[in-house]
Length: 564
Image (tube, rainbow, N blue to C red; front, top):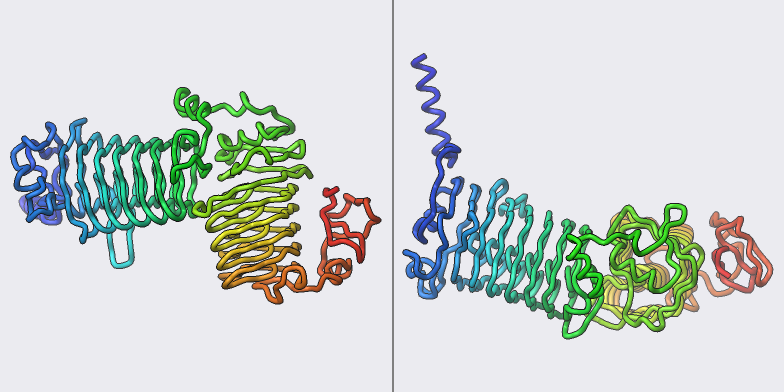
């Protein structure tokens, strides 16, 4: 028994040496000195017992503008414990460390840490990369990069935050979980700058930001850059100013999920104008969404038919702004639509299915060269599907990932077409701007495509296992680098099969995938039947729906059998 007792004491001592403390040991914070001592026990369980401000002992030497040689508060790094704010606030926190990374009340928060019921208000925080009003980097740092971070619940920040990259009103880079949290004030940086979070890799739920956000690249009212992260039940309501990849809710969304999250299109200014980007809702819808506990009922807006919500009018199509984020919903177009009276309108995010049902949407127009992910549908998620829709007479100018039908595609596009003028910078295509692991089949595009890099008649950039099959393009294609008649740039071994482009009409003799044919060959059924297409020759003004493709041999290009 004596040996067992000695063993248990030794285990306890070792646990204390590595930073573990008994759960019953509660550490109270009443002064700035107590707060500063958190860095001495990073695994502790802390309770803030009162507000901390300029009148609280320790402020002058630790957190005011003269502390630490004018640098102010020294961020707490590698926090891995539990910090319970208990509804109290830390006020007038000052940090001036523009040449340092990981800047905030907490510079780095580790995996497993918890911060809850805490507010930091009247903050003035300046840092370099990974700068936030409360946390610079919610996620540990290692030689191989960041890993999972902690959880922030019922937290908020208000004041001014300034940094370089990964800059947020509450958190600079989030690789953990943020729940029921918000921010207010002014957030300024260069890249990946957001009202709440600069760069989100994980979960952001039931949050909001009402900040003025200013940056250059990847600037959003809520999140600057959503990198395969999740944003749900959240909103933003502040002005956004930027130069590239700018959004009212999210500046740049790469592979991320956005669900039931919005901003007020008619109230939020993006570079001084009301512009639709991911999450845009018209004023009446946004107000109703908030008033109904962040809920809108699609059954009150659209009728159903065979499991699809029916789109008969442009007004019906506009409802996809509210419901396009729901992956469980299917929509079916019942009439041709003309968007001539709806300039700069498009659906920026689609997670469900859209069946064009053989109808056309004409006169899509958009002209903001600092907005990315532009097309009739800006972003199609991996489970999203678009089929049997024609987009005619498009006239769109965007920044990156611009296509006549889809700007950024991770889903499935089939039996569809586009025509008109598509202009952008990088990843510009007549039908799809960027095909990121998605699939494009039995589709075609015509019209002019212009860009600087990765520009293609059908697809601008095809990467990460995306597939293009049984498709073609005929439009004029111009650009500076990686320009192709069918595909501008095909990266990471993506499949392009049984697909063609018109070398004469496109002005391009090469393509990063597909087979070039002259105009005569492109109007000959043999070109496509030999490639295994489901195609048949028909008489002029006739169609045969038993085949996917029809052609008036030696007279027309192939056309989809649903096209009249």
